Image 1: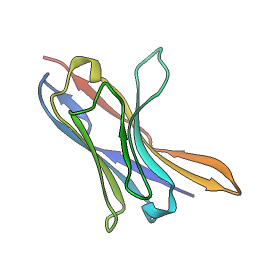
Image 2 (image 1 turned 180 degrees about the horizontal axis):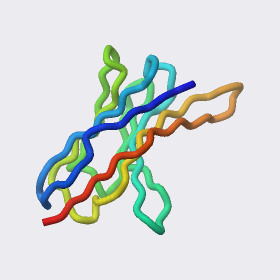
Image 3 (image 1 turned 120 degrees about the horizontal axis):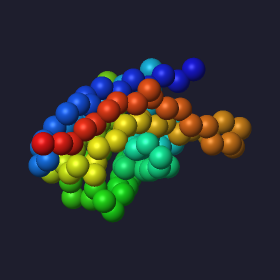
Image 4 (image 1 turned 45 degrees about the vertical axis):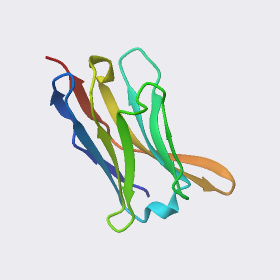
Length: 119
């Protein structure tokens, strides 16, 4: 069973930075895509950033130029560096790992980490 453990959330002032880290229980090459999602109460979970097995990165328009996703294939981690944070970035951030099992997409999720941007 895949386990994803997030760390690095917290409270930061607008304009500040945080780095989130997601540690996978196995090789991250097991997954076709890994990424970060976020969710605020009353809204759907939305994609923030993702990285595919071949290293292709994608970002939500709202975070382009401010957030950077990266991975460490030795440590089996996927990180999200968040700079120039805004109050609207406040959310619970979830790590996601996607794989195909018998041709069907299977998603695994971390427990979530709270990010609060406030003065």
